[in-house]
Length: 388
Picture 1 (cartoon, rainbow, N blue to C red):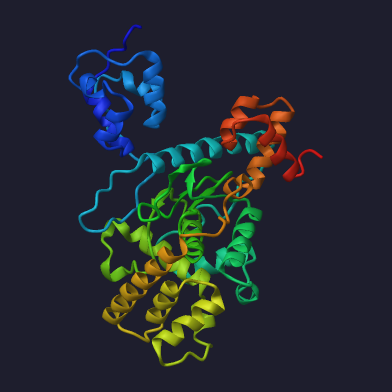
Picture 2: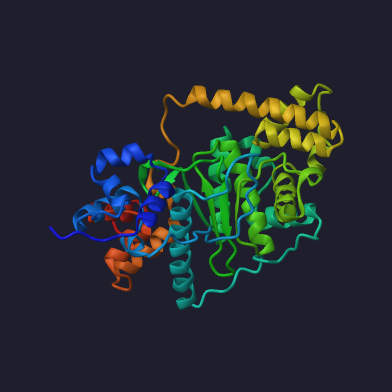
Protein backbone atom coordinates (compact mmCIF):
# COMPACT_ATOMS: atom_id res chain seq x y z
CA UNK A 1 0.00 0.00 0.00
CA UNK A 2 1.23 3.55 -0.74
CA UNK A 3 2.88 5.35 2.15
CA UNK A 4 2.42 8.96 3.24
CA UNK A 5 5.60 10.99 3.64
CA UNK A 6 5.50 13.09 6.79
CA UNK A 7 7.89 15.38 8.61
CA UNK A 8 9.55 13.45 11.48
CA UNK A 9 9.51 16.65 13.53
CA UNK A 10 5.74 16.95 13.09
CA UNK A 11 5.26 13.31 14.06
CA UNK A 12 7.25 13.74 17.26
CA UNK A 13 5.53 17.06 18.03
CA UNK A 14 2.14 15.35 17.67
CA UNK A 15 3.17 12.59 20.08
CA UNK A 16 4.54 15.00 22.68
CA UNK A 17 1.47 17.23 22.31
CA UNK A 18 -0.78 14.30 23.18
CA UNK A 19 1.39 13.37 26.18
CA UNK A 20 1.85 9.77 25.00
CA UNK A 21 5.21 8.12 25.88
CA UNK A 22 7.39 7.07 22.95
CA UNK A 23 7.42 3.39 23.97
CA UNK A 24 3.63 3.33 24.28
CA UNK A 25 3.12 4.70 20.77
CA UNK A 26 5.84 2.45 19.34
CA UNK A 27 4.01 -0.61 20.67
CA UNK A 28 0.83 0.51 18.88
CA UNK A 29 2.65 1.47 15.66
CA UNK A 30 5.61 -0.87 15.22
CA UNK A 31 7.21 1.23 12.45
CA UNK A 32 6.91 4.53 14.30
CA UNK A 33 10.68 4.66 15.11
CA UNK A 34 11.41 4.11 11.40
CA UNK A 35 9.02 6.92 10.41
CA UNK A 36 10.93 9.24 12.75
CA UNK A 37 14.12 8.42 10.88
CA UNK A 38 12.49 9.55 7.65
CA UNK A 39 12.57 6.04 6.22
CA UNK A 40 9.09 5.59 4.85
CA UNK A 41 5.82 6.57 6.45
CA UNK A 42 2.40 5.28 7.48
CA UNK A 43 -0.30 4.20 5.07
CA UNK A 44 -3.26 6.53 4.88
CA UNK A 45 -5.30 4.12 7.01
CA UNK A 46 -2.54 4.01 9.63
CA UNK A 47 -2.37 7.81 9.56
CA UNK A 48 -6.11 8.04 10.22
CA UNK A 49 -5.67 5.76 13.24
CA UNK A 50 -2.65 7.75 14.42
CA UNK A 51 -4.60 11.00 14.14
CA UNK A 52 -7.37 9.50 16.27
CA UNK A 53 -4.93 8.22 18.91
CA UNK A 54 -3.11 11.56 19.12
CA UNK A 55 -6.33 13.63 19.02
CA UNK A 56 -5.10 15.74 16.13
CA UNK A 57 -6.88 16.71 12.89
CA UNK A 58 -5.56 14.71 9.95
CA UNK A 59 -4.46 17.77 8.01
CA UNK A 60 -2.03 18.83 10.77
CA UNK A 61 0.24 15.86 9.96
CA UNK A 62 0.97 17.30 6.50
CA UNK A 63 2.54 20.48 7.89
CA UNK A 64 6.21 20.95 6.91
CA UNK A 65 7.14 21.82 10.51
CA UNK A 66 5.51 21.81 13.95
CA UNK A 67 3.26 24.85 14.47
CA UNK A 68 3.51 27.23 17.40
CA UNK A 69 0.33 26.26 19.23
CA UNK A 70 -1.24 28.76 21.59
CA UNK A 71 -4.37 28.91 23.68
CA UNK A 72 -7.31 30.27 21.66
CA UNK A 73 -8.21 32.54 24.61
CA UNK A 74 -6.13 34.92 26.77
CA UNK A 75 -4.19 32.92 29.36
CA UNK A 76 -4.66 34.13 32.94
CA UNK A 77 -3.41 30.93 34.52
CA UNK A 78 -0.79 31.07 37.23
CA UNK A 79 1.25 27.88 37.34
CA UNK A 80 3.14 26.44 40.28
CA UNK A 81 6.88 27.04 40.31
CA UNK A 82 8.68 24.72 37.95
CA UNK A 83 5.56 23.69 36.01
CA UNK A 84 5.08 24.37 32.32
CA UNK A 85 2.27 26.46 30.94
CA UNK A 86 2.07 24.49 27.70
CA UNK A 87 -1.65 23.78 27.29
CA UNK A 88 -2.80 20.19 27.08
CA UNK A 89 -4.68 18.85 24.08
CA UNK A 90 -7.65 18.37 26.40
CA UNK A 91 -7.77 22.05 27.30
CA UNK A 92 -7.29 23.21 23.71
CA UNK A 93 -9.95 20.85 22.35
CA UNK A 94 -12.40 21.90 25.08
CA UNK A 95 -11.93 25.58 24.26
CA UNK A 96 -12.37 24.95 20.53
CA UNK A 97 -15.58 23.01 21.21
CA UNK A 98 -17.00 25.79 23.35
CA UNK A 99 -15.98 28.45 20.83
CA UNK A 100 -17.86 26.59 18.08
CA UNK A 101 -20.92 26.34 20.32
CA UNK A 102 -20.75 29.97 21.33
CA UNK A 103 -20.42 31.15 17.72
CA UNK A 104 -23.38 29.02 16.63
CA UNK A 105 -25.56 30.25 19.47
CA UNK A 106 -24.59 33.87 18.82
CA UNK A 107 -25.61 33.56 15.16
CA UNK A 108 -28.81 31.83 16.23
CA UNK A 109 -29.71 34.68 18.60
CA UNK A 110 -28.73 37.33 16.09
CA UNK A 111 -31.07 35.72 13.57
CA UNK A 112 -33.84 35.95 16.15
CA UNK A 113 -33.24 39.70 16.71
CA UNK A 114 -32.23 39.06 20.31
CA UNK A 115 -31.13 42.00 22.43
CA UNK A 116 -27.62 42.35 23.82
CA UNK A 117 -27.11 41.57 27.48
CA UNK A 118 -26.35 44.92 29.15
CA UNK A 119 -24.33 43.44 32.01
CA UNK A 120 -21.59 42.06 29.71
CA UNK A 121 -18.66 44.49 29.96
CA UNK A 122 -20.60 46.77 32.30
CA UNK A 123 -17.82 46.83 34.92
CA UNK A 124 -14.10 47.56 35.01
CA UNK A 125 -11.21 46.32 37.15
CA UNK A 126 -11.04 49.75 38.78
CA UNK A 127 -14.55 49.42 40.19
CA UNK A 128 -15.10 48.42 43.84
CA UNK A 129 -15.43 44.61 43.89
CA UNK A 130 -18.35 44.85 46.34
CA UNK A 131 -20.34 46.96 43.88
CA UNK A 132 -19.68 44.60 40.97
CA UNK A 133 -20.52 41.59 43.14
CA UNK A 134 -23.75 43.24 44.22
CA UNK A 135 -24.69 43.82 40.57
CA UNK A 136 -24.01 40.15 39.79
CA UNK A 137 -26.16 38.95 42.69
CA UNK A 138 -28.97 41.33 41.69
CA UNK A 139 -28.88 40.33 38.01
CA UNK A 140 -28.97 36.64 38.88
CA UNK A 141 -31.35 36.95 41.83
CA UNK A 142 -28.80 35.18 43.99
CA UNK A 143 -30.13 35.61 47.50
CA UNK A 144 -27.81 34.94 50.42
CA UNK A 145 -30.55 32.99 52.17
CA UNK A 146 -30.64 30.45 49.33
CA UNK A 147 -27.20 29.20 50.37
CA UNK A 148 -28.13 27.84 53.78
CA UNK A 149 -31.43 26.53 52.41
CA UNK A 150 -29.58 24.25 49.99
CA UNK A 151 -29.11 20.76 51.40
CA UNK A 152 -25.45 20.68 50.36
CA UNK A 153 -22.82 22.29 48.13
CA UNK A 154 -23.99 20.29 45.10
CA UNK A 155 -27.55 21.55 45.40
CA UNK A 156 -26.38 25.14 45.73
CA UNK A 157 -24.13 24.69 42.70
CA UNK A 158 -27.10 23.46 40.67
CA UNK A 159 -29.11 26.50 41.79
CA UNK A 160 -26.25 28.90 41.04
CA UNK A 161 -25.82 27.44 37.52
CA UNK A 162 -29.56 27.64 36.85
CA UNK A 163 -29.65 31.33 37.82
CA UNK A 164 -26.71 32.11 35.52
CA UNK A 165 -28.37 30.28 32.64
CA UNK A 166 -31.67 32.07 33.26
CA UNK A 167 -29.79 35.37 32.98
CA UNK A 168 -28.72 34.42 29.43
CA UNK A 169 -25.27 33.01 30.13
CA UNK A 170 -24.30 29.69 28.55
CA UNK A 171 -22.86 27.50 31.30
CA UNK A 172 -21.01 24.34 30.29
CA UNK A 173 -19.70 21.98 32.98
CA UNK A 174 -17.59 18.97 32.14
CA UNK A 175 -14.78 16.92 33.61
CA UNK A 176 -13.79 15.25 30.32
CA UNK A 177 -13.39 16.27 26.69
CA UNK A 178 -16.84 16.03 25.12
CA UNK A 179 -18.17 12.67 26.26
CA UNK A 180 -14.81 10.89 26.14
CA UNK A 181 -14.17 9.56 29.66
CA UNK A 182 -10.64 8.55 28.57
CA UNK A 183 -9.71 12.23 28.25
CA UNK A 184 -10.17 13.79 31.70
CA UNK A 185 -9.66 17.49 32.36
CA UNK A 186 -7.10 18.42 35.01
CA UNK A 187 -8.29 21.10 37.47
CA UNK A 188 -4.65 21.82 38.33
CA UNK A 189 -4.18 22.99 34.74
CA UNK A 190 -7.34 25.09 34.57
CA UNK A 191 -10.52 25.58 36.55
CA UNK A 192 -12.57 27.35 33.95
CA UNK A 193 -12.75 29.95 31.21
CA UNK A 194 -15.05 32.69 29.97
CA UNK A 195 -16.10 34.08 26.59
CA UNK A 196 -17.53 37.55 27.22
CA UNK A 197 -19.84 38.06 24.24
CA UNK A 198 -22.69 40.61 24.57
CA UNK A 199 -25.19 38.27 22.88
CA UNK A 200 -24.05 34.84 24.03
CA UNK A 201 -21.58 34.95 26.93
CA UNK A 202 -20.22 31.54 27.87
CA UNK A 203 -18.71 30.14 31.05
CA UNK A 204 -17.01 26.75 31.20
CA UNK A 205 -16.41 25.06 34.55
CA UNK A 206 -14.01 22.16 35.01
CA UNK A 207 -16.29 19.46 36.38
CA UNK A 208 -13.31 17.46 37.64
CA UNK A 209 -12.87 20.03 40.41
CA UNK A 210 -14.63 19.79 43.77
CA UNK A 211 -18.18 21.13 44.02
CA UNK A 212 -17.05 23.96 46.28
CA UNK A 213 -14.24 24.70 43.82
CA UNK A 214 -16.73 24.83 40.95
CA UNK A 215 -18.90 27.29 42.88
CA UNK A 216 -15.93 29.64 43.24
CA UNK A 217 -15.00 29.18 39.57
CA UNK A 218 -18.51 30.09 38.42
CA UNK A 219 -18.43 33.27 40.50
CA UNK A 220 -14.93 34.06 39.21
CA UNK A 221 -15.86 33.56 35.54
CA UNK A 222 -19.01 35.65 35.99
CA UNK A 223 -16.71 38.49 37.04
CA UNK A 224 -14.87 38.00 33.74
CA UNK A 225 -18.20 38.35 31.91
CA UNK A 226 -19.02 41.54 33.83
CA UNK A 227 -15.70 43.19 32.92
CA UNK A 228 -15.95 41.89 29.35
CA UNK A 229 -12.66 39.95 29.32
CA UNK A 230 -12.25 36.48 27.82
CA UNK A 231 -9.75 34.21 29.50
CA UNK A 232 -8.65 30.87 30.90
CA UNK A 233 -8.25 30.73 34.67
CA UNK A 234 -6.90 28.46 37.36
CA UNK A 235 -7.20 30.98 40.16
CA UNK A 236 -7.99 29.96 43.70
CA UNK A 237 -9.16 31.85 46.75
CA UNK A 238 -5.61 32.51 47.95
CA UNK A 239 -4.68 34.72 44.99
CA UNK A 240 -4.46 38.09 46.73
CA UNK A 241 -3.08 41.52 45.79
CA UNK A 242 -0.07 40.93 48.01
CA UNK A 243 1.35 38.17 45.82
CA UNK A 244 0.00 38.81 42.34
CA UNK A 245 2.09 40.33 39.57
CA UNK A 246 0.74 43.07 37.33
CA UNK A 247 -0.20 40.53 34.68
CA UNK A 248 -2.62 38.94 37.12
CA UNK A 249 -4.48 42.06 38.26
CA UNK A 250 -7.50 40.88 36.28
CA UNK A 251 -7.49 37.58 38.17
CA UNK A 252 -6.99 39.36 41.47
CA UNK A 253 -10.02 41.55 40.77
CA UNK A 254 -12.18 38.61 39.63
CA UNK A 255 -11.20 36.68 42.76
CA UNK A 256 -12.19 39.61 44.96
CA UNK A 257 -15.53 39.86 43.17
CA UNK A 258 -16.09 36.10 43.43
CA UNK A 259 -15.40 36.11 47.17
CA UNK A 260 -17.83 39.00 47.62
CA UNK A 261 -20.50 37.33 45.46
CA UNK A 262 -20.33 34.19 47.56
CA UNK A 263 -19.70 35.66 51.00
CA UNK A 264 -20.79 39.33 51.16
CA UNK A 265 -18.68 41.13 53.72
CA UNK A 266 -21.75 43.07 54.91
CA UNK A 267 -23.39 39.78 55.87
CA UNK A 268 -20.21 38.41 57.38
CA UNK A 269 -19.59 41.30 59.77
CA UNK A 270 -23.02 40.71 61.30
CA UNK A 271 -22.26 37.08 62.06
CA UNK A 272 -21.06 36.03 65.49
CA UNK A 273 -17.93 34.14 64.60
CA UNK A 274 -15.95 31.95 67.01
CA UNK A 275 -12.51 33.27 67.89
CA UNK A 276 -11.03 29.93 66.82
CA UNK A 277 -10.19 30.16 63.10
CA UNK A 278 -10.98 26.50 62.41
CA UNK A 279 -14.44 26.82 63.92
CA UNK A 280 -15.04 30.14 62.15
CA UNK A 281 -14.08 28.80 58.73
CA UNK A 282 -16.38 25.80 59.17
CA UNK A 283 -19.31 28.02 60.16
CA UNK A 284 -18.78 30.35 57.19
CA UNK A 285 -18.41 27.43 54.76
CA UNK A 286 -21.66 25.84 55.91
CA UNK A 287 -23.63 29.08 56.05
CA UNK A 288 -22.67 30.32 52.58
CA UNK A 289 -22.04 26.92 50.93
CA UNK A 290 -18.48 27.76 49.97
CA UNK A 291 -15.24 25.88 50.45
CA UNK A 292 -13.29 26.24 53.66
CA UNK A 293 -10.59 27.85 51.48
CA UNK A 294 -12.95 30.67 50.51
CA UNK A 295 -14.00 30.92 54.14
CA UNK A 296 -10.36 31.40 55.16
CA UNK A 297 -10.00 34.07 52.49
CA UNK A 298 -12.94 35.99 53.94
CA UNK A 299 -11.63 35.67 57.49
CA UNK A 300 -8.42 37.23 56.22
CA UNK A 301 -10.44 39.97 54.44
CA UNK A 302 -12.12 40.71 57.79
CA UNK A 303 -8.72 41.32 59.32
CA UNK A 304 -9.11 38.44 61.75
CA UNK A 305 -5.79 36.86 60.71
CA UNK A 306 -2.57 38.19 59.20
CA UNK A 307 -1.48 37.54 55.64
CA UNK A 308 1.25 35.16 56.83
CA UNK A 309 -1.14 33.20 59.08
CA UNK A 310 -3.65 33.06 56.22
CA UNK A 311 -1.07 31.54 53.87
CA UNK A 312 -0.08 28.94 56.45
CA UNK A 313 -3.70 28.02 57.23
CA UNK A 314 -4.59 27.94 53.53
CA UNK A 315 -1.75 25.57 52.63
CA UNK A 316 -2.67 23.27 55.51
CA UNK A 317 -6.35 23.25 54.52
CA UNK A 318 -5.53 22.69 50.85
CA UNK A 319 -3.37 19.67 51.72
CA UNK A 320 -6.15 18.29 53.93
CA UNK A 321 -8.76 18.68 51.18
CA UNK A 322 -6.51 17.00 48.59
CA UNK A 323 -6.08 13.95 50.82
CA UNK A 324 -9.82 13.88 51.49
CA UNK A 325 -10.58 14.08 47.76
CA UNK A 326 -8.20 11.20 47.00
CA UNK A 327 -9.99 9.03 49.53
CA UNK A 328 -13.35 9.68 47.83
CA UNK A 329 -12.21 8.86 44.30
CA UNK A 330 -13.01 5.19 44.64
CA UNK A 331 -16.77 5.32 44.07
CA UNK A 332 -19.94 7.26 43.55
CA UNK A 333 -21.69 8.70 40.54
CA UNK A 334 -20.76 11.81 38.66
CA UNK A 335 -23.05 14.85 38.95
CA UNK A 336 -22.09 15.75 35.36
CA UNK A 337 -22.34 12.28 33.82
CA UNK A 338 -25.12 13.19 31.38
CA UNK A 339 -25.05 15.38 28.32
CA UNK A 340 -27.84 17.47 29.81
CA UNK A 341 -25.45 18.66 32.52
CA UNK A 342 -22.38 18.93 30.32
CA UNK A 343 -24.11 21.05 27.68
CA UNK A 344 -26.19 24.11 28.51
CA UNK A 345 -29.86 23.06 28.03
CA UNK A 346 -30.78 26.38 26.38
CA UNK A 347 -28.07 25.82 23.80
CA UNK A 348 -28.96 22.13 23.33
CA UNK A 349 -32.65 22.93 22.85
CA UNK A 350 -31.81 25.57 20.24
CA UNK A 351 -29.52 23.21 18.30
CA UNK A 352 -32.02 20.34 18.38
CA UNK A 353 -34.89 22.57 17.27
CA UNK A 354 -32.80 24.03 14.44
CA UNK A 355 -31.81 20.54 13.27
CA UNK A 356 -35.39 19.26 13.35
CA UNK A 357 -36.55 22.32 11.39
CA UNK A 358 -33.82 21.82 8.78
CA UNK A 359 -32.00 25.04 9.65
CA UNK A 360 -28.91 23.13 10.82
CA UNK A 361 -27.48 19.96 9.30
CA UNK A 362 -27.99 16.93 11.50
CA UNK A 363 -24.27 16.12 11.32
CA UNK A 364 -23.43 19.62 12.54
CA UNK A 365 -25.91 19.20 15.39
CA UNK A 366 -24.28 15.94 16.44
CA UNK A 367 -20.88 17.65 16.49
CA UNK A 368 -22.13 20.66 18.45
CA UNK A 369 -23.73 18.40 21.05
CA UNK A 370 -20.83 15.89 21.12
CA UNK A 371 -23.11 12.96 20.32
CA UNK A 372 -22.64 10.17 17.78
CA UNK A 373 -26.05 8.81 16.84
CA UNK A 374 -29.70 9.67 16.30
CA UNK A 375 -30.86 7.57 19.26
CA UNK A 376 -28.96 9.82 21.69
CA UNK A 377 -30.23 12.86 19.78
CA UNK A 378 -33.87 11.80 20.14
CA UNK A 379 -33.37 10.88 23.80
CA UNK A 380 -31.99 14.32 24.58
CA UNK A 381 -34.73 15.99 22.53
CA UNK A 382 -37.36 14.23 24.66
CA UNK A 383 -35.49 15.03 27.86
CA UNK A 384 -35.48 18.73 27.00
CA UNK A 385 -39.12 18.69 25.89
CA UNK A 386 -38.32 19.61 22.29
CA UNK A 387 -40.24 16.53 21.10
CA UNK A 388 -42.76 14.38 22.94
